[in-house]
Image (cartoon, rainbow, N blue to C red):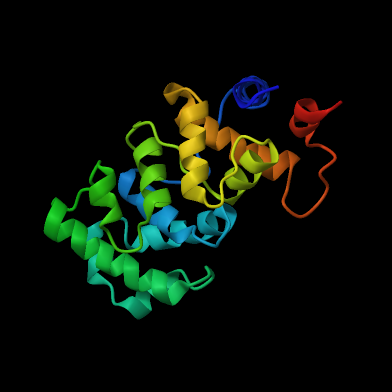
Length: 206
């Protein structure tokens, strides 16, 4: 079985399990999504969703975020890892949005990646989930499973993303990256029982 054949099986099986996929981070608009994704680095989505209601009740817009002092932002997100750095980035990002983008979240990869605390993965999530632009954000679950399913030899997430984009049809990317994340959490956790990971067994059973 070659990579293309394995990729097709993966898509078919994931579509059976997750015909609908919710967006994991709660948000009401592109700005809230951008903030939530920026906060999610090295933190669980669950923890971000616990913290953002309080944050967005105080600072739901770039204007209100920029008006806060860094220690005030840090206090609101203190339960999240790297809260000092993230508070600094959220204030700087808010100012950048006001100064360069009229307070709106830009809808290009380049503009997003120029914002404080926003890397390629965060930009990809915002482009796909807020603006519907095909993107394939690769997190640790996707990187691990793509290697496990022998769909990439990716030494890093950049290579894994490139391989995923070659293997999977563009129109599937926005949904498929979420399906893989949900599968990783539910069926094939990095630490824990791999018994439920039937896709891996299906691909490589003798």
